[in-house]
Length: 169
Image (cartoon, rainbow, N blue to C red):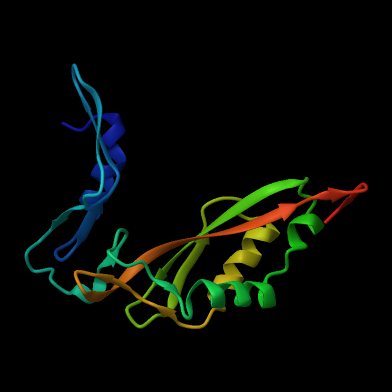
């Protein structure tokens, strides 16, 4: 019997058809007398045996993360050339440090897709960060067990707004 906490999961499972793949990460189990048990670093999958197409799998944890082509130094150059650091100021953000987290998929071929922000959703700053990632050149894809794979990537973009002599910059 499904309790109300699991009704969302039940609805998703009920929509699955042959060939569906469901993956669970960051699993927390409440065990009577013990409390919350966290199962970290493991991905559990429920799938039917007919589903074996690795091209359709997306990894959330990999041995080697996807990275910007050329590494950190090229990423810095790309940001310096394309990031408009004034957008949060223009949007009225107060002095402080803001980290916009952009989540996206890097395909096995290095292409970026499904770009969204996890925070500051709908702001001009978040939209700018999404466009910034969408317009990047191909990335170096992630690897798992020595094989190039499709993988999710989380990229923080940090904005620092300082007030100097009453002027935000």
